[in-house]
Image (tube, rainbow, N blue to C red):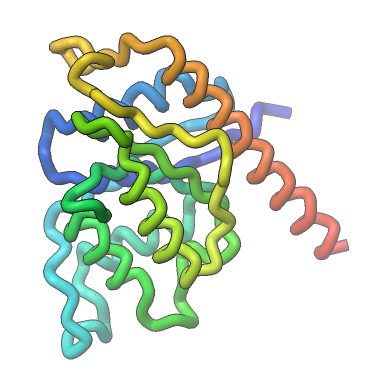
Amino acid sequence: MGEEFIHVAGIVGSLRRDSYNRWLLRAAQQEAPPTLRIAELGLEGIPLYNPDGASPPPPAVQQLKTALYAADAVIIATPEYNHSIPGVLKNALDWLSVPPEENPLEGKPVAIIGATTGNFGTLRAQLHLRQVLSYFNADVLNRPEVLVARAKEKFGPDGTLQDELTRALLRQLLQELALRVWRRRFLSALEQH
């Protein structure tokens, strides 16, 4: 029997090609256990949320929803803009929340990470993101927290994460994410018997 992989949807809450959070997600891909695969889902092309155009959803939104339904878990790398999550990320979540009965994050394990050049490591943004995700009833991991402060000092010019403590925290977080997925699969198998 072949190895069973865990498919994780990675979302970066920034549109910048070389954002610290994209680099942090790339580091997570490198630190992931062998059976865990993280694929980044882009937020480019998602229009501003407008309830008048929500049914059917625009193609970019439907594509994001479909990918999230197919994923076993989600990891979100969020910057902190003005003490909160970026508008592009909130906009995508607003689209994902409608209609409520088509929630792609219901019960799904979600890990949050974030990097910023400031001193608080996206603490406030992550708190706000947790509040938003509570609406989705997602299974958000509480620990370990990956709050990368002073990101400029922790990444090399090529985007490589050079901070060993952050790498260790990423490994711990991804192991916990994998455990949540295995637990969810186990409980689902029990319910089917």
